[in-house]
Amino acid sequence: MRKINGLDFILLVDDDDATNYLNQRVIRKADINTTVEVAVNGREALEFLTNSGKFTNNQTLPQAGLIFLDINMPGMNGWEFLEAYKKLPEDQTRKIKVLMLTTSINPDEEKRAIDIPEVKGFIHKPLTAEKLERAINVYVF
Image (spheres, rainbow, N blue to C red):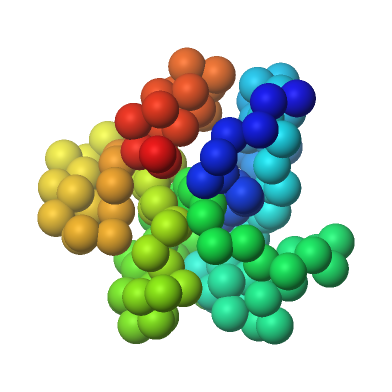
Protein backbone atom coordinates (compact mmCIF):
# COMPACT_ATOMS: atom_id res chain seq x y z
CA MET A 1 0.00 0.00 0.00
CA ARG A 2 1.22 3.46 -0.77
CA LYS A 3 1.09 6.12 1.88
CA ILE A 4 0.32 9.59 0.59
CA ASN A 5 1.60 12.31 2.88
CA GLY A 6 -1.22 14.67 3.75
CA LEU A 7 -3.98 12.15 3.08
CA ASP A 8 -4.95 10.69 6.44
CA PHE A 9 -8.58 10.05 5.54
CA ILE A 10 -11.14 10.10 2.76
CA LEU A 11 -14.72 10.88 3.75
CA LEU A 12 -17.44 9.83 1.32
CA VAL A 13 -20.61 11.86 1.87
CA ASP A 14 -23.42 10.29 -0.15
CA ASP A 15 -26.79 8.78 0.70
CA ASP A 16 -26.58 6.06 -1.96
CA ASP A 17 -25.22 2.77 -0.60
CA ALA A 18 -24.30 1.44 -4.04
CA THR A 19 -22.32 4.59 -4.84
CA ASN A 20 -20.49 4.41 -1.52
CA TYR A 21 -19.68 0.76 -2.12
CA LEU A 22 -18.31 1.47 -5.61
CA ASN A 23 -16.32 4.48 -4.38
CA GLN A 24 -14.79 2.38 -1.61
CA ARG A 25 -13.79 -0.26 -4.19
CA VAL A 26 -12.13 2.36 -6.38
CA ILE A 27 -10.17 3.67 -3.39
CA ARG A 28 -9.23 0.15 -2.23
CA LYS A 29 -8.04 -0.81 -5.72
CA ALA A 30 -5.87 2.32 -5.79
CA ASP A 31 -3.97 0.70 -2.91
CA ILE A 32 -3.86 3.87 -0.84
CA ASN A 33 -3.01 3.52 2.83
CA THR A 34 -5.70 5.75 4.31
CA THR A 35 -8.84 5.45 6.38
CA VAL A 36 -12.09 5.64 4.41
CA GLU A 37 -15.23 6.77 6.23
CA VAL A 38 -18.81 7.08 4.96
CA ALA A 39 -21.50 9.57 5.94
CA VAL A 40 -24.96 9.31 4.39
CA ASN A 41 -25.69 13.03 4.68
CA GLY A 42 -24.11 16.32 5.65
CA ARG A 43 -25.12 16.00 9.29
CA GLU A 44 -23.26 12.70 9.65
CA ALA A 45 -20.25 14.24 7.92
CA LEU A 46 -20.21 17.13 10.40
CA GLU A 47 -20.50 14.66 13.27
CA PHE A 48 -17.52 12.79 11.87
CA LEU A 49 -15.50 16.01 11.69
CA THR A 50 -16.52 17.33 15.11
CA ASN A 51 -17.90 14.58 17.36
CA SER A 52 -15.05 13.60 19.62
CA GLY A 53 -12.68 13.61 16.67
CA LYS A 54 -12.87 9.85 16.27
CA PHE A 55 -12.98 7.50 13.34
CA THR A 56 -15.31 4.52 13.58
CA ASN A 57 -12.26 2.45 14.51
CA ASN A 58 -11.61 4.83 17.46
CA GLN A 59 -8.46 6.38 16.04
CA THR A 60 -8.11 10.11 16.62
CA LEU A 61 -9.25 12.20 13.68
CA PRO A 62 -6.24 13.24 11.62
CA GLN A 63 -5.78 16.76 10.34
CA ALA A 64 -5.52 16.15 6.60
CA GLY A 65 -8.07 14.58 4.36
CA LEU A 66 -10.28 14.59 1.33
CA ILE A 67 -14.07 14.84 1.33
CA PHE A 68 -16.09 13.68 -1.67
CA LEU A 69 -19.42 15.47 -1.21
CA ASP A 70 -22.69 14.72 -2.99
CA ILE A 71 -25.20 17.53 -3.46
CA ASN A 72 -28.62 15.92 -3.08
CA MET A 73 -29.10 14.03 0.17
CA PRO A 74 -31.89 13.86 2.75
CA GLY A 75 -31.46 15.41 6.17
CA MET A 76 -28.67 17.81 5.28
CA ASN A 77 -27.67 18.20 1.65
CA GLY A 78 -24.26 19.16 0.30
CA TRP A 79 -25.02 22.89 0.21
CA GLU A 80 -26.24 22.88 3.81
CA PHE A 81 -23.15 20.91 4.84
CA LEU A 82 -20.91 23.53 3.23
CA GLU A 83 -22.66 26.35 5.10
CA ALA A 84 -22.05 24.54 8.40
CA TYR A 85 -18.52 23.50 7.37
CA LYS A 86 -17.57 27.15 6.80
CA LYS A 87 -18.31 27.81 10.48
CA LEU A 88 -15.85 25.17 11.74
CA PRO A 89 -12.56 26.49 13.15
CA GLU A 90 -9.97 27.11 10.44
CA ASP A 91 -7.38 24.98 12.24
CA GLN A 92 -9.81 22.06 11.94
CA THR A 93 -10.45 22.48 8.20
CA ARG A 94 -7.16 23.92 6.93
CA LYS A 95 -5.81 20.59 5.64
CA ILE A 96 -9.12 19.18 4.39
CA LYS A 97 -10.03 19.42 0.72
CA VAL A 98 -13.70 19.25 -0.29
CA LEU A 99 -14.61 18.03 -3.77
CA MET A 100 -18.17 17.84 -5.03
CA LEU A 101 -18.83 14.37 -6.47
CA THR A 102 -22.24 14.38 -8.07
CA THR A 103 -24.43 13.25 -10.93
CA SER A 104 -25.57 16.83 -11.45
CA ILE A 105 -24.91 18.20 -14.92
CA ASN A 106 -26.51 21.52 -14.06
CA PRO A 107 -23.94 24.22 -14.94
CA ASP A 108 -25.47 26.53 -12.31
CA GLU A 109 -24.67 23.99 -9.58
CA GLU A 110 -21.12 23.60 -10.83
CA LYS A 111 -20.64 27.40 -10.86
CA ARG A 112 -22.19 27.67 -7.40
CA ALA A 113 -19.81 25.00 -6.08
CA ILE A 114 -16.71 26.48 -7.67
CA ASP A 115 -17.60 29.91 -6.26
CA ILE A 116 -17.38 28.49 -2.73
CA PRO A 117 -13.74 28.80 -1.60
CA GLU A 118 -13.96 25.62 0.50
CA VAL A 119 -14.83 23.57 -2.61
CA LYS A 120 -11.67 22.72 -4.50
CA GLY A 121 -13.24 20.84 -7.42
CA PHE A 122 -16.40 19.54 -9.07
CA ILE A 123 -16.33 15.93 -10.27
CA HIS A 124 -19.03 14.02 -12.09
CA LYS A 125 -19.92 10.52 -10.88
CA PRO A 126 -18.87 7.81 -11.08
CA LEU A 127 -15.59 8.03 -9.23
CA THR A 128 -12.96 6.23 -11.28
CA ALA A 129 -9.33 5.40 -10.62
CA GLU A 130 -8.33 8.25 -12.95
CA LYS A 131 -10.59 10.76 -11.18
CA LEU A 132 -9.29 9.63 -7.79
CA GLU A 133 -5.65 10.01 -8.89
CA ARG A 134 -6.38 13.45 -10.33
CA ALA A 135 -8.11 14.47 -7.08
CA ILE A 136 -5.08 13.37 -5.10
CA ASN A 137 -2.50 14.87 -7.44
CA VAL A 138 -4.26 18.15 -8.20
CA TYR A 139 -6.39 18.95 -5.20
CA VAL A 140 -4.79 17.26 -2.24
CA PHE A 141 -1.14 18.17 -1.93
